[in-house]
Length: 343
Length: 269
Ligand SMILES: Cc1cc2nc3c(=O)[nH]c(=O)nc-3n(C[C@H](O)[C@H](O)[C@H](O)COP(=O)(O)OP(=O)(O)OC[C@H]3O[C@@H](n4cnc5c(N)ncnc54)[C@H](O)[C@@H]3O)c2cc1C
Image (cartoon, rainbow over all chains, first blue to last red; front, top):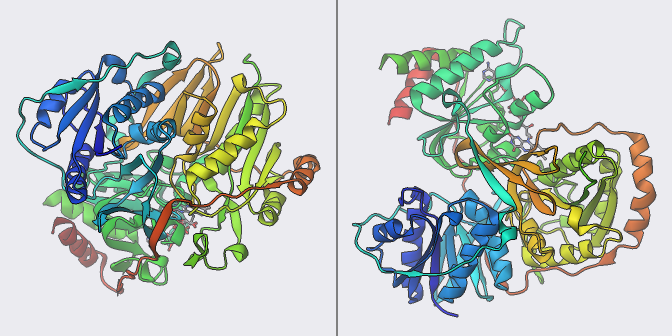
């Protein structure tokens, strides 16, 4: 077993997602530091186009499991393709982007190959010829650097940790890897994607700013009344003007399951924190959210952090944000929206 | 109506998220300071899986739910005092560490062996449930590894919804990128469903359910087999808390319009 394999799923038009191109950069630098040859494995119906786009990466070879059966994001077929690519390559290190698709199947592939897998990798380093990985434990509470003796070693690389690879397309020679899907690999059919209505598309992974709304938006305000309708207008107004991504505290989205009046465009998918997501954005603005630790662990990868809260002793003021504005978020956001609208 | 399901939920305990955690180096690899003393809760996403399992079992007559758990026996016993009152289940206990630093592969092998040993489990009707990731290791691979070891090739990760179609097929919504759901149809069990939040609120405590559960839980805890899982082959070089504590500037008594101007300038910078 030797060498490094990078597995990618091309998009239907043969292009590659940003996170896939980031992993190309990681593969290049890691293989070089280890002094190893590296290759790329592709699957789906657009493999030649994707291979041509990757012709300038310096990969020693490109392997492909071709066919429309492998366009479908389904465990059985994705695992079969990745297994064949890993076996054919004989690689000791296998990298892939931490997409929903690879996260669903690559551990199973590692198991089939008698390998080991680590996920949510936020960095790879090579010291003295040894590959070391970096990841967080206890939901972003502590960070470890470690190595593994076992091979093959599969690593799923988190997005946002490397510059996306870019280079000119060329003409790539592709080595075909044959996979015949067994009938029982088609027990699952993918019906499609259920996207929110376009005006409710609130999660934008590439946005410059994360806007977090907390339960305070639904609470009684100074006049003794809740103002959920105005809260919804202000939040949606800001999201539209700033093209921000919408995050939520758990308390706010839990109100829905508890049957209370809340913001109808929010769901658990928006929840940030211990039992929610850990998005990556350069800036984050928290509003009407207390900044308790189970929420703030989800801000690990948010660069600059600001918060608006009526309470000067809220969690954000305890070293968790760069700036805390002690103010009424309704009033501030009314002004912010007016200024963004005018500019 | 669908044939009964045999639902196995894998889930363990994790430190209460409001606790401060500090890593310490131990002979068997890293651990947490005062780990045995830390208050624990049911791993949140595994908890959602358990509540979804119980809800499904209630809808499809004859279905059964097992909770297979690997953790220190004494702490599991404490945890059961609260969990047992929530929903009906049978417990299978493996007495060992619940550390986030234990290797998912070792944990998965222990769980798969325990599941294979469940008397009367119909593997053709098996739905293997659990959380999409733990609040300790947060790797999101354990269920997948168990599923592979049990030969299950229909697997779903980050599930928020499971419906049973009139012909018994499974209709599944999984979280994918950009706040979207992937909708799939799987003809029948067996399948692995690693749950995200689902859609059910936490059930209220029901002392009657608690009493019924405790009849099987206590004997299971007593006869729990010790298992050794660790992190063989992994060399942890460092485990650190993030050092960065921000130097927070607290802005008070400033008109909302001035704050708004500052925020807009910052957003545009
Ligand atoms: C197992 C477990 C897992 C958890 N996981 C998560 C998680 O993933 N994510 C998460 O978020 N939480 C999580 N929590 C919950 C967490 O501990 C907090 O309870 C939650 O984050 C609180 O939400 P909140 O700040 O929106 O609400 P609250 O605590 O109710 O705070 C509301 C805030 O709004 C402010 N406010 C009210 N009106 C205004 C106004 N007009 N202007 C400005 N400010 C105003 C108030 O001052 C207050 O600070 C978890 C808890 C547990 C036990």
